[in-house]
Image 1 (cartoon, rainbow, N blue to C red):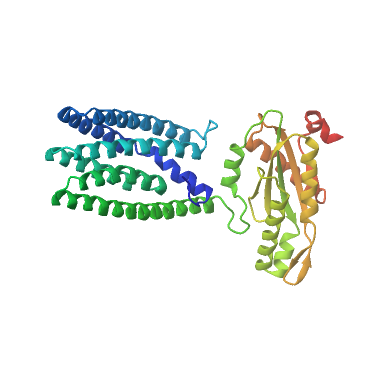
Image 2: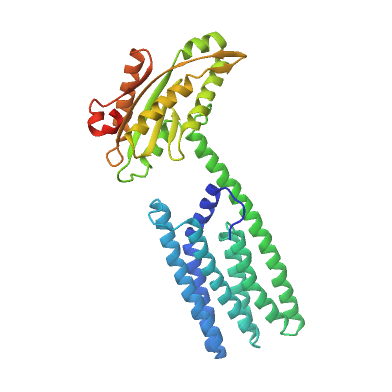
Length: 373
């Protein structure tokens, strides 16, 4: 069901499928009302079967929408994925489309012109709903439109008279027009969502280094998976001698240095770790899913070693110092403000001692004896 899309766009578009409860409710009642009226008028068992299937599929789809909406709002608490939800929506949409197509096609086999009007209204109403509300998933929309419209178009054409030939032609033309509308709505929705996602990204990213900013740092920390038996570590650091480089080589060179620092930090991190720039030359690294306290200390020294390696700026080789403080806590007990405060205090202590690495708390070795080994 999926075409080539960035993951964030795909998730946002699939989430839109959960918010068509009202149109689906109206469509379900319409299928049942028209199907029941036609079945009893024509004494046609097959129309009744199609009506029952359409009503049940509509009801089930409404239930799926409500569950999907809760899943989206509660932060994905189950093992289900957007692909699972898309598949569920697709299958139920195809069932509803099949019931619409079957009811309309069977009605056009009769000679009751008043029922033909109802069948036409049913098909056009369904097609309009799909084109306007399901277009965020174009492959599902086009398939559903085809399933509903093609049997009806063929049945109307086989009625034989000129009026029905004209009506069948109109069905075919409007099917093509609906598909064009699906394409337009999909492109428009995708552009709007991409713009929103980009705005959200910019609001949470440092514009110079591309690292997280303070807002994204806190959100990222709060979103960390608290795996039992793991630790979370926070490293606070700033650059020693940055102001002198900025004054001597200019702000452009200083910016290049900060960009280089951001790139080196990213190279050191694991996929779930977070690096943020929180001030002029101040950075924070959050290390997640740590199972060995020695790894915390190792990363701290790796950061200092990497950042004190000379940078090439403005055709000149420059070197900065680093003062880094870190702390760690069990994942279940880790609290953002406390850990930032402790790591920041350790970084100031490191600066007073001439740079390098300091750790906090005083009881660190008691809590994590591996670090003292």
